[in-house]
Image 1 (spheres, rainbow, N blue to C red):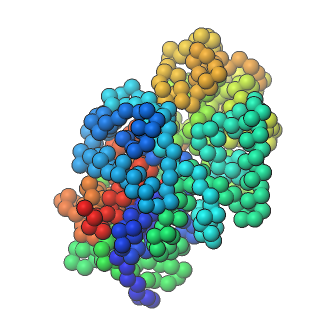
Image 2: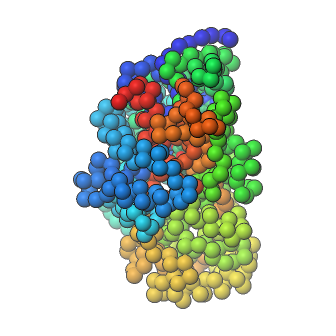
Image 3: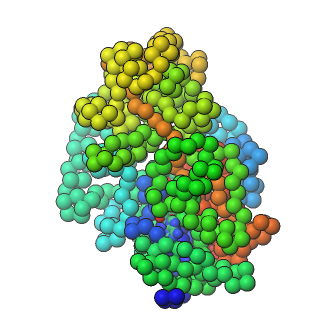
Length: 556
Ligand SMILES: Cc1cc2nc3c(=O)[nH]c(=O)nc-3n(C[C@H](O)[C@H](O)[C@H](O)COP(=O)(O)OP(=O)(O)OC[C@H]3O[C@@H](n4cnc5c(N)ncnc54)[C@H](O)[C@@H]3O)c2cc1C
């Protein structure tokens, strides 16, 4: 061994799960090291929307939302079905609000609530049409000092001129900048501020969404005295007589034995980039993940080698999302996750056979499940000139930004008629024309008898409130017509290490392995392979990280 280091707690991975555990343990007086394999901190978390699903969170009373533990538990029982885990669901629901209180009181974390961001199945038992999700408040990255350069930037495809657009009012301004002077002035101010910050700091400093969450967690970790090691990969757990005592960490070619007196928290972000496990557990071959390349399933392998039980039995091994492949101009490709555009009026999704297969406004996870159930792994989002200029489509932005570059790169396909669009995309022409004709006939009245697009509060949340009677449905009537191809991606994985309500890792006999914890996507999801609402991976990641930190600190 090249060197030895001691601490109370070693946290492996610096996303929401890891940093939540690290900050909590450090705030309870423990000496904590975070080992992060990548050169930058923040993991998938820094690329994310930064939403946390926390039923009964402390801000619900400020926004007039009523909720209860019973309703939330009923909802999760319905959503997780036979995979419902009462012990961990109860731990999540009782501790989630306490976690939010703790971080808001003791650290740099701040959150904004939303009264209208709906559960994804609001009509299911215990579901709500809004109020359970909170998002990390925007954060001034300059508070990180030199550490700002070590924060993973947002996904370039989810930025406009390098700006990650915040949720709520900010997003509305960006969507309406060509329609309203106020919005145009707002966007101009944001662009100027961003340009000035990029000149001075090499990147934007007004962090939003997941970048704000990771930035605020990083700041909290610095304030709490956590030692943050980048380019530091945990390669082996150190065990003595069945107890985990630490790990071997490889850091720039140097192997360090880190002895962790209290224990190790695995928070490596699951296996979205582990080709072997993906091939075994995903039902489809071609897969594109916007998660960092470093999330290669190390946590699951380290845990399994220490005797942990890995559960690979969820009906969906990951949280699916449709992504489009964006040519980056240098021969490489970026990925654009389609969260919002599918719900807009005048947008439908069809397979290569020209058939619709889903309510396009449903969640990304439900969209992909329907695609796979239709026996396909790719689809086309099809729209008309009115809709694409009003809302954009995927990486294509609304007016006044030009369509030309996207047509030239091949990202966007266009046809003066539906049959021309079919030729440009390879979609069955006769079927596409028939599908659009049927859709348009009903859409003229705002109806969609086939799939009931616009039928739920969640659909309507992303619709266009200016379009009536259905904010999610309008005919595709204004030529030319456009299409972007989407394929299967994920936001993170669900199968994982079996843990208990204390975030302790369990062995094959369901006994805790002393000194070993897991949080975030390394741990088996409590959602049973379903995607119940906005923030259902980060909410539990933060909560079980907090639970692990407190258990390690023997806090009551
Ligand atoms: C575009 C996008 C938007 C999303 N929006 C949301 C949202 O709004 N709400 C929500 O709930 N979820 C969202 N998700 C999903 C969410 O981001 C992830 O589920 C979550 O960030 C996972 O957190 P984590 O702590 O488990 O892992 P991560 O944040 O991925 O962190 C894991 C870290 O571990 C490191 N690591 C891996 N192996 C090792 C090793 N051997 N040693 C040391 N370090 C290691 C990795 O490099 C990585 O930095 C989104 C995902 C994407 C891609």
